[in-house]
Length: 123
Image (cartoon, rainbow, N blue to C red; front, side, top):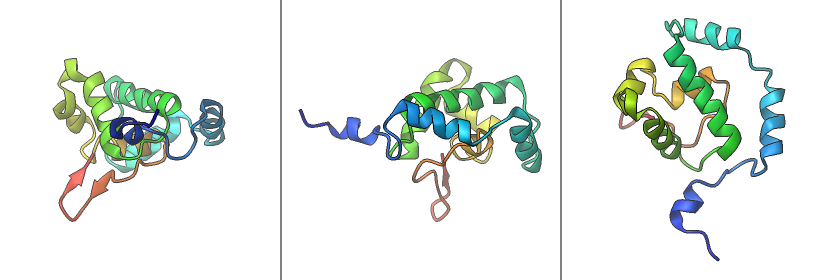
């Protein structure tokens, strides 16, 4: 059975195996203090709301891998945080883009097309 366009879009483009992704994340030696230091450089003091997004991004990456397009991660974030206000809520927390800035603070690789400065888009 051939994958549909939607399925292909959500396919991990780097590590299709969850064990490989787990090894990759462990190799990053990520810590909360590292994220706090990065956030401080961006002028952000991380709250429990920020941490909920960061933890979601790390778990999402572990479960799904790196998507073929940042839009996939943005949609997953929006769905997960709908009760809090969805994309407007996320944008308030991460002015640099919930996927772009959130992934950086979560010490994750940036999904392709996470930002396009020529048209002012930052997922």
